[in-house]
Image (cartoon, rainbow, N blue to C red; front, top):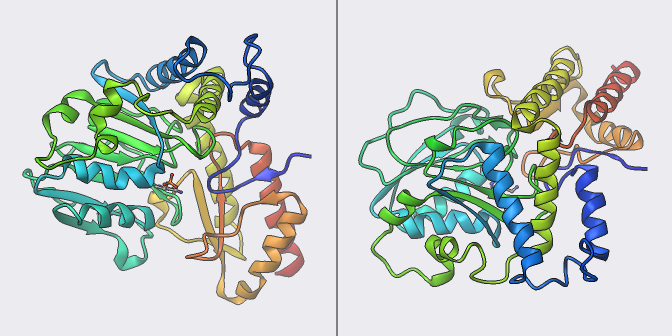
Length: 357
Ligand code: PMP
């Protein structure tokens, strides 16, 4: 029996992705070869990567002058590639959590970094109304903070190039890609399995803003745009699974439908948290993430947290223990998570509260 999966990433994927990837592992179409055995330079795999790229462009209405890349190294390699390529003198980083901090630390290796942060309140809110100097090379933001559970749901515009880590909320809402110089993320939440990184980059930004330093070939963006993500062997099976996941998003009604479902799931779960005497949310209400719903127990029930996690797991809800750095509970409700999954979790919360409070 399939569990109710609330893992933060890798996480629940659509049945379509699992079924069609399983089939393609045995035989891809009628090629007599597994998708893992195809040459990445052959026409059969080329059709797979072309379709994955076309789906990205279609679903997000990506403008003409952008490239879509599938790379290795995770979002973490992007933390280093971005400043390596584009930090000439000074960059602005909005530090809203653990991953944003990691991105910022890499940038500090290459130049001056202006930081605005929500560290003062343990990253429980998204800073607003701050000024961005016009002479920075770019602004870096993390639209969804997977560990702390805050999210930026608007496409900002600071009048300077904007780069966004969308690892954990990509494809959960329509995005105005034209507002961004670059968007990137690890695939292992809404896009597919771990092992492939997506990059959407404005070609003019990429070509006209390269820092004057020697950049190793593999770490240059234009190496990968010129070779259509095939400078080296791409993570083929992962790209196949991404294509299937994006086909599922399309079949479900696109990012507009994902947006509505994200609202429904998150509202249902946050309502249950807010109306409970036992649980409480941990972040500023207006900045709550729809993807990672973080909650703890009120002080008088604190010692019951482990019991609750066990109780939920007996009801087949897995992955609700908070990140090891923060504790508490976190239910990650990515695109493939259903209302049924969320209802089972809310029932478990209500039953546990009735029993113990
Ligand atoms: N950014 C965010 C927002 C993340 O959630 C994660 C991983 N959970 C990362 C970056 C790092 O991604 P990766 O493990 O692919 O390097």
